Length: 199
Length: 391
Image (tube, rainbow over all chains, first blue to last red; front, side, top):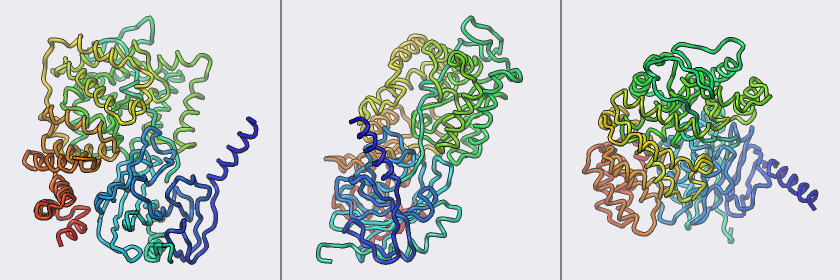
């Protein structure tokens, strides 16, 4: 029994670190959001079912990653399983509330990033209105230094639609990766389409 | 979202310390329990175990010196280094101070004279005397050579260089851990209760000798205990040190007893004015942790201590706005209103007031607050969004 449990645990851990290919073209995220990348990405596979987000990367998540929020409902945090950078005592992460305005959604996202990266000092910039999936939304940029001493830049584009937070976020090293991936990120954000039962 | 591993919280909380007083005099004493204390300017003998320890710490310090997590504001560092220099006396040229951006209460001293103060500790100090008590405590770790004393006790056959080498490899290379974690041997082992008591005693004497109110160290402990008792996460909020070292309460009582009736300066106003703009960053770091009850208790007590009333009232408004439980909106509006009427409120207090008034459906009040915010900070990070609210 113990051996069986150990094998099951090994399979689970292995699955957590697997990546699958996302080909260019329309891709459905959890049946609620469609994105259309123009280049191939790696998608983290085997994520915990409770984790409400998806992660794509080109060169590995420490260098660049696109974080996808496919409609996170009220009362749920953006992160369920903290990264290994995070203080294990830091949970629970802040959760979405229906009364939040754009400034407070930015604060929620920024604070989540900060806590999950080990209480890093994070600077937000240029919060402004935009559209996401044809709905009024918001966008902001941010910067922080990771506890691994790499400096990161990032951008978030999203919207609260019918009480759920949708969005895409690019986080990449300031040196090279952010600028390199930004055009594709802009295309991804522009391609976002919320999926409903009728669509 | 990320990979790696972060902090083990010890240092001032769990860091070592030793013999009493006379630090400023720089005289050398030998104890039955440990090595002779350092003389000013002294370095360990070449090829000794202590030299290996210093060498490892010097490598870690090179990383820290270039870390992105160090506060570099020249006027702040000049001020804080000045406090340390005054307390260290003849050892002033042997120690170096780094302020590390971690929003928790801690300070550490490495055996080679590298002292670290975390920004969370700066936030929690109401005055210079409280900070001086901490710095005095940490200086004692250095002069009394507690690190090597503990390491030799811990060693029992383990090769010290291999031990430290493994620590460095794991911390800096293997797991990508911030080098500051290793920067003190306190990160690898805890000090004894007796050493802690002695360190407290040294801190008290150093602070008193420099003219500070020596009882302020006890006041700092008291507030920390009150704060963590309000943590929503229960015992987990006390952190690893508190969970395993219930002697904190006992140490606080001893400090109270030993400083009863003694007086001195607190230099509260100088502390506030010299930290300047860093104070808003310290508040924002704390707010990011979303530990509402704990932060609210802390800000309330800092406010009652007279620490920068406008900023602390703003912080209380922020806690209530972010928590947004029943009645919090009204309370937040009250705190913001009081903040902007007090001295030291940041422009963000007007933004907070606008956001809660908007949420409460008070459009005119929200517009007035937003307008004031944009007038005070036209290049704010969220200016474009706030302007969209006005239009």
